[in-house]
Image (cartoon, rainbow, N blue to C red; front, side, top):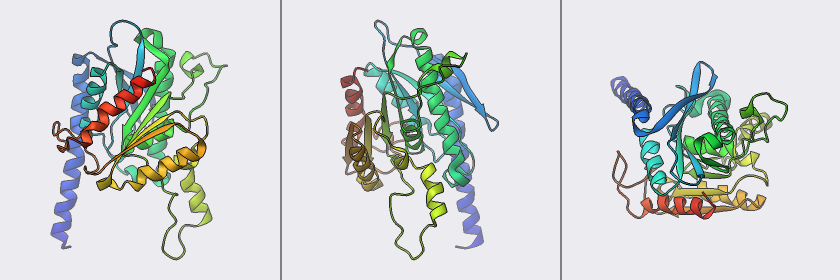
Length: 297
């Protein structure tokens, strides 16, 4: 590729990233006018993660779904956030949107430190909502997290790195458990260590050990929450299938739904909000909502 062509492609990528970041920032600014309360969660590396909590449904307390958009840990796609949250809210489930850590390196970040920071944002959101369940009129034992692509990796992190809280802490949030009660991994069941390289040499023992630290599959445990996994065949169904084989090996409850059509990043796949129009694949969302409702959300 000629230098001029390379520069053009590079400029287009930068423009796309900036556009996505701007769209998500605009969405966050507008959420308070749509009955969302936006609050600060935690600060690290110069960025403060935030949570936007939609006003709860009237009547008895219900479950909560934390929605995490994708974007390769470089940006967050608004169409994997607000439209998704609104759909699940329309099904009777309380919702919130997580504004988590990203950086310019994204998934190429050395040691995937950005994934760790984003995952910790997810855990803090779960703790916060559980500690303040009465204020938000939600069920403290029905808090789910779900995300797309990088947001799905964040979800997997939260579903495998949780703890019971610190009973000695004076902070009620820190005393709360960070275990999600359900997790939706939406075209985000990636693993860096599941496949053996087919070329001579492969990874060294040290490289494998380091990669395993940030691999959700290598951090699975029998007390992980039930998981809903969604994948399309155009996005390689083996990603979701391999992940669910590991869930089965640990006895973790799950459902997997793979659809033949739909490229990566299609969100609701309903032809709206900059998404492809794949009516059959779009069925994943109401099925996921039914799955949560079946579990008491």
